[in-house]
Image (cartoon, rainbow, N blue to C red; front, side, top):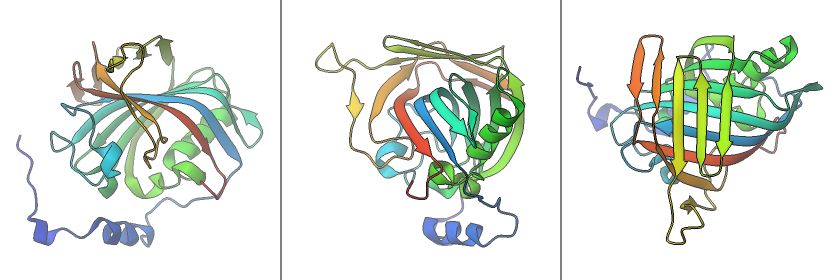
Length: 236
């Protein structure tokens, strides 16, 4: 099925569309909360080369016009209102119809089944943007949370390789791209990207998503790996 695009003349500037969403009564409201997450986020999307969102801050279209991706969040240290999040894993299925900065993201969240009730609810608040701070912009960008559920979420970090496994729903593996110095991967540094300033370029290996009517094969497509240091502080 072909995608229908409105003429550019009909498209509001990104900033104007975001301003309108901020004023919308349907927008999820932020409630700044004491939370923090340190760890690693890695993903695999359907861009055929390194994702242009990193340098354009989401203003350039994905290479295939729309974005289909899985994301993995490995929490090495973290808390939500006094409840530990350390050691928990999160998987996400993300679908974006066009430029990342224009919003309308659809997201399914798979939360580690080891999480306590408060940790589970806290992670949903963080990922929806409702907890404010680093992820607060998600209240504007995420238009629909398709589903959220407890799952066994397995994350593997082994040398240059990363893997996310959520039953048969996500079987994702990526590998860092080798740089001119074979001992070091290709890294985009000092960016203003929402994930973090230093983003390692990667490529999908065997990588498939099968859930909610989506069947995606992201093998050989763009991957990213980034250390994250997020929090609910107003300075983020």
